[in-house]
Image (cartoon, rainbow, N blue to C red):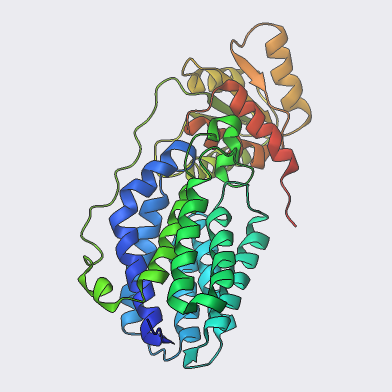
Length: 363
């Protein structure tokens, strides 16, 4: 089969991706509900279907221009980490393909390799970390290996197969990067949603070699959006004790927002003094602990000084039951704790996730 890697081919690829993401949105969200935010399928469906509409009218004439525009759209419209990551994949591919009207098969191989390298740098991830890299890296490697003797279509088929196998291989892994890493051993036994969606992307790239298949596929937007995850009973609660009411409340709001599309675990801020002044209040801490308690324990994060001393005094006086202090940075630890609790992590898992936040690297 002769494959011409022109703008028409890559439009089929993007349209096909939108179709399969729409068809698989519910499944991707179910996968994400087990170890993530329960919004992966919903976010990708929104981004890829709106991308298809935007690109239909876009004045782009080369594969490089098309993929660059698609990547920019995803970065701007897909929520969570998926937007920057998938946007990076397409934009990096577009940059490597350059201004040629027809891409060469070897150039596509370099584009795939560059896209994977960019994602690895962005997410500080590697194969075996239980991320989308576990599907993308094998796909890029398989394409490069199959191209010399098999041609473009066979190389793309090999890439798609390797991506699906790589995604399936994430099931027994413990997550070391991403939101799933907050769950520790609880992430074992689950298919990584990012790897699953990456396998769909690579499969769509191969299926773009068959115009009839793409034309016969159902159009995007035929399925309803996935329903948000329902709240789970008896989750660990989180209390945020800060010298500042504004800091405690805004950190609580951030943690809830990053907990995903489902109903987050209970988060109770205890910031400042009762009159709003700067300081810490034992009474506010007691109230917050009671508000956050669902019967599975409460994790408290403190910003500094008297916040820690206040909570420790309450614990020593046995005024707080089932409450544990997390030794963690306030904002990062709060997000890690709330995400893990919202996903159903037990007390040990929530404390471990907050503790791991101390090692988060920024560079």
